[in-house]
Image (tube, rainbow, N blue to C red; front, side):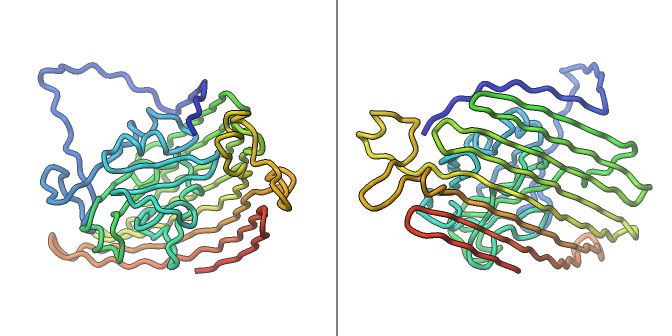
Length: 324
């Protein structure tokens, strides 16, 4: 369902830039993508790929990645209700748990997709993402069994800075939308750096019984303990809750397109049943990379997650806890 938001954003930045350049002599930076476990120039890549930069991500609406993802040919992302998404590469948008099928998604080199194929993409705050790499088609099989491709999300805070940088963004819009996002990059010394990404998002939604409340905090840490060795940590906690209004028939849509699923036969309405999804997730991982020479790199990581889900629905009540 198409929904239009009226957004008003206020940004407070810890750094101001002033620059004058000669457009004739200005040389564009080369775009690199990390597709085959090492960085390569995008124009030299033999497979179909795309890169979404930080500027491109922030140029779209900040509450979700839907708008910026849909700028990539062959990729389709939909928002069924605030906080609920479907994502497909190469037309593989079949009904699936949490809306992602045949696509593996990584966050800072750690698998966000679990062993059962579930990808909780709605746990990620778009403002915390620095770059998105998309590898489409069969070449994504080097990351495991999938037919759609691979999407890699890279967080803010891993680009080395010499001075602290703090950014605060406030967004307001129609249907009760409010979002607060904070990003702070704090260099500890010349070899260590800590980044904090925190956000809170709420919305009443366009339809009845479609409110959203989402709180996230993410920590990124990197330590270059030797000339050719680096240790990285990524961890986040998300407390997510969103109501699910359910589907409507054609007659119900024409009568009132904003209503939630009404009562039908012995089944209560979505509002009466308080249909919703509540998800509390801890995710964390540590990786180590050592470059032996220009052609050999040793990489190792360890990661884990704890996921608690409650899903009251019209015909059942699901309560699940996962640990990986």
